[in-house]
Image (cartoon, rainbow, N blue to C red; front, side):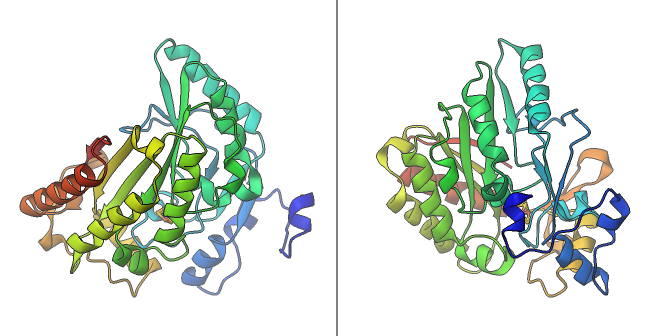
Length: 317
Ligand code: SF4
């Protein structure tokens, strides 16, 4: 509270969830934008963690929501009427709950993903919750932490005692995708510069290229992205570097929400152009055609092998 009072911010105190839900705005379009600029500081009541395949065993709930405006973001469907950002003050309880999950599986390693429901790095310069979690897992024998971000606000995390237990991943993409579909996030150059800092601070590093999106000149766009990574990353980061490749996909419910929240989007969402893949709970997703998928996979794998021959591709999906 002390910290936020010193900033030029509007602060409201409430115990009412309805008041939070009814944020100002004349229509749903405006309300959505106000909500995404609102940080709710509260208590995390549910300490049961969701699973988080394929990148980790559990999702650790350090925050929910995000101030970014990525047109394709799945939080639009999962957070529905509550797109505001929430951060929790009972961090000790959340970390204790994580320790219990670790104990249950020990001596097997348990990995926790901190960015399933938010872009935690984007708000952590305000809260330092992630920093506490990084240092907590730094002391852990059988627990690891990982997260991914599209933001460059990493300076306060550089001196955290991570002991190599946290994998710091950046979401990167071709300039075209960032320019047209990721408003409100850091530029590619800033993300890559931040990745260099993180690597020099000794963190294991990774990149998620997502969503891989076909557009005019996509081959060049993704090649250039790899060139920029190559120019920035120090030698020591290349020995233990991971990549995850995720092609663009959408579901029918997601398409509706995207078109409501971002009516002018250029994002291609035509079911006829895509291949249908059955999904969980009967909600299938539309992914690229088989030949396009192969094309994407081959190009990106070739680039990765050319620039980072020792990197590991965790999955392509
Ligand atoms: Fe969603 Fe990540 Fe973009 Fe935030 S930065 S809007 S979490 S895709």
